[in-house]
Length: 246
Image (cartoon, rainbow, N blue to C red; front, side):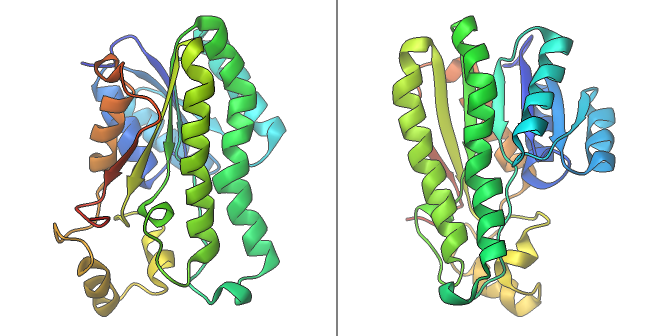
């Protein structure tokens, strides 16, 4: 149990990759806050793993502050933060994506990392220890057309991960990222535009291992990067993509 005794906040943990990460963390001994904008989903996953459910709008500063206070009230410390919550816009030519969709994607995928850092980095600095994991995407490394602003938001997250790692290393805080390929999550249909056998076959043809990511794939990789076994790893972007970025 590589996370025995650790406390962890996982955002967007009510479904998809976040739920997979929360489940593996709990299996590995961590106490997990399942943070999600969907209250019912958060409660369902939290009940499954014996964790704490927390409703949060990850793009709202007051909501992120309340999430942090709830974690500190429960635990008195925060060992791990996983910035997993994310959204996309529907595939479209870059100039046709609406301003509202652009703002929403950047708020959830980029501003949220700033907001959680503002609240939780001081806690980890005080502890002189902590692990932050940002769930980016292969889209930030090898972008697909018609998802331009989503790609850009994940590229931002990758750069943020590296700059955070450099700045926080002297404070004993490690920061890494995962770059998953499209997976069996609620966002899959949005990435493809429509969920049809033909679109799935087209996507799968770009993944050498021939399958989509599963939430458990993300959970296993996240558990390693956030454990003491990865104590010499910071600023890394681990591609969990079945070879997509080769």
